[in-house]
Every structure is written in C-alpha cells, then in structure tokens.
Image (tube, rainbow, N blue to C red):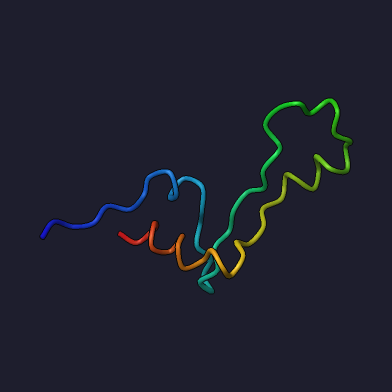
Length: 64
C-alpha cells in the first residue's frame, strides 16, 4: 500500500497551530478593492480560525 499524499492546495492554504487549531486567511482580498473601505480591507488582512465543522475534513487533507 503506497503512502497517502497530503493535499498540496490545502497545505498552502492552512496552517496548524501548536494547540491543534487550523488557521486560514480570509477571502475577498484579491481584487475589486477600490469599492471596499479601508476598515474592511484591514480586517481582511488578519487570519482567522477554521470553524469546528470543517476541521476534521481539513486535517484529513493535511495528513501526510
């Protein structure tokens, strides 16, 4: 049985913290930025945690 490969797209998008939570970057920060105000763009810069419902699925994609 060959080794399972981790999803390359998931490994680029998500990072696991030391406590086991998964960090992700926020969406809607790539284009059409002139219509978004500065406060909204500043908030989109920060990363956030993945919701509990999706954590199991993402950990499976990241498993090596």
